[in-house]
Image (tube, rainbow, N blue to C red; front, side, top):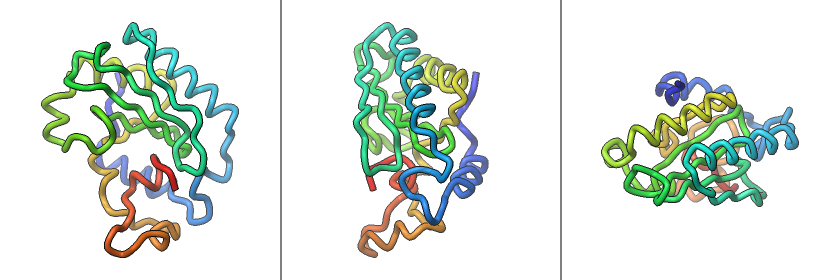
Amino acid sequence: MSMPLDDQSAWTLLRDLDDPDHLEHPRDYDYTTTRAKFNQLATRLDRRFHCSCAVDRHVQDASHHGVIVIPATATASADHITITVSNFGDLAAVTLGNPGSYDEQEEEELFHSDDRHRIEDELHALGYHAVSEHILWVRYDGVSGLASHYPPERPPAWWIRFFDYL
């Protein structure tokens, strides 16, 4: 079983993937391969959770490829679970509810370990790197010009850099 990257490893990976010239996807991005892997993940999660996950494959102008939502009725957790797959480095963010719904402590209490393990197993099997949501809400201070597109009083977070619309 794979665990989310520890914070130090996650920060190293995020900074390594942060390209000043490519905001939506990396220079060597292969849409066809990324889509096939994303579709495999959706299929595997449907099977693993005995449900039909909601899948958003119609993402444009974004740093993420797609979103998979496991319905609350199929989980042991207190809410639905959202998996957002980045266009960068096989990154995946797993959140209880919608991204940003719960703080780190609430998620720890309400995100059932059985659900977490099933998701992490499927991510690991396909080579995804799970990144903890809490570090992604830190103010973006990377090498791209992303911050220049936001007002100083509302700077972007690392979530926007790798998991959101741009």
